[in-house]
Length: 135
Image: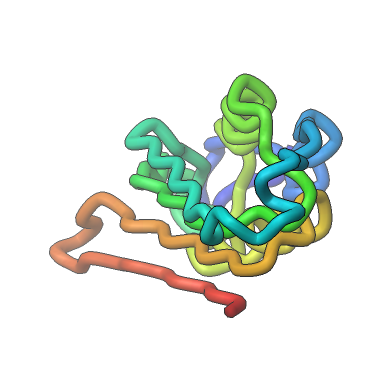
């Protein structure tokens, strides 16, 4: 367990994030092989994402939106929920959480396109939005 500077609030290190909980299923339909159906944009949004600020030890909460165009795999939603839950007690900066989510999804999905947006709740009068996109 790490501790915020000068405080005794404990939290886990980023190695406790559990990308192994992410599961996929095949995205293969006969119609896709013929090219008669255009690419599908899949969007997932949750307002329940939370992690811990490693500087203050206080919770960071955010809305996370994932947008992707599948290539051969689709993300199973319950596994995504468990993946997000693995962040709950992890000390990670907002920008790093966005990068980690993007990297883990890119690795397991290998989508045609991927965009991860995190919109964090206002902290100290400052709003933070992080966006990573691969087109």
